[in-house]
Image (cartoon, rainbow, N blue to C red):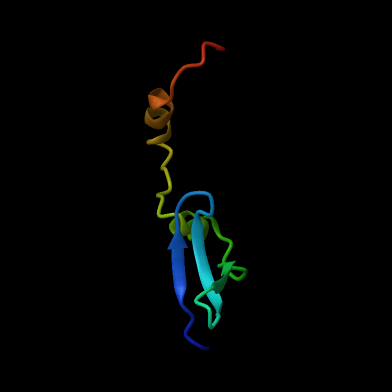
Amino acid sequence: MDQRTVIELHGDLEGRYLVEEERPDGAIVIRRETHPDDETVDAIVGRYQEQRLTGDAIPEVLRQLDADGEG
């Protein structure tokens, strides 16, 4: 497997991208990094550097949400 340059973008194009081509004028062509082989919950959560909540933690997280007055 060849080594590819990976860049991480923030803002409108949030996420990890692979550099596909570097052009002579300094422009680069990128594509979003995909993970077709690992779509487990743990892999997806890990990609976004989040953590999985346990059943005991969920009520505390819900208490921290702003009430919208609808229930």
